[in-house]
Image (cartoon, rainbow, N blue to C red):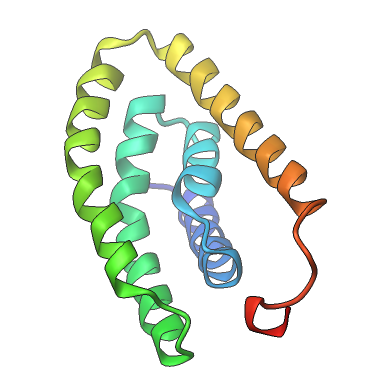
Length: 131
């Protein structure tokens, strides 16, 4: 790895940590597109993102739990239920053409962005307990 790649990776990690702690996002939104831009294939970027988000998510969980923002039961149910989906997703990702996989990922990002934009116009401002 070159010095420039290492510096970019450190910057990416810092940005992911900042955004993960603030918004609860990270891996797919930040790591995958940046890793693809750094030269990894779509499948390798997704796999690398899955591993890289583990420490980021762990620290985020720890910090948010200290503020009383964590709901353990739903988080664990979603996490455990996703294991089967992950296995199926890996099988699909390794069989699809790289270009198609990249386009599908772009569509996913656009759908998520549209959903967030749509919901932001309907949700009252402030924290739930202040409504």
